Image (cartoon, rainbow, N blue to C red; front, side):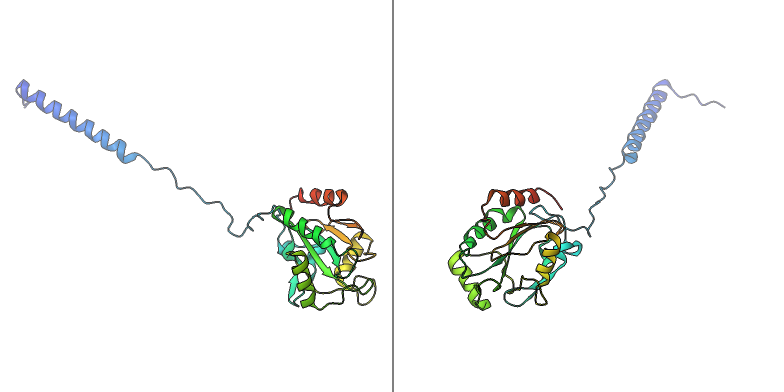
Length: 222
């Protein structure tokens, strides 16, 4: 049997059904929408932080000159690998030498270039003319009071060839074929410790050739 509804009632039911379907469709659109996937952090937590001064070589990767160790002027062990990633100017220094005023120029280099990844590494030595006779405390005071030195000072060393020669200078001689002929011989060491260039004691800290060598190494990252 077919039930026939009055036309107004049929229209009312049809409109109601259509409204419900439209609502359901709208609900389906909202329900099926998806939030964007969460971003994945790809940062390697074990990777070394970049050196703010520009170098990328780390102490664990140190080689060449930076694979060596020594002692501070105060007698504390120092791994030169802690300076890996920086360009170093290694100098055998003395307090009673005619070239001692070079301390001023060395400190100027330290002040001007440290934030670019540079450091002076000074090794007192009494090899030439007995011109560094002082104790560690006396050397520290002399450098601080007279020149305001802020770069690292290490233990007194022997630079000359022989059984007493410091491994520091044995290595520098092997890498360059040259040893200091007097106080204030200078070695420019690359960030990775593998390249070393020698400059004579009379080469002033502001010498154009020395500055060019330092600048060239500072431009090399890692």
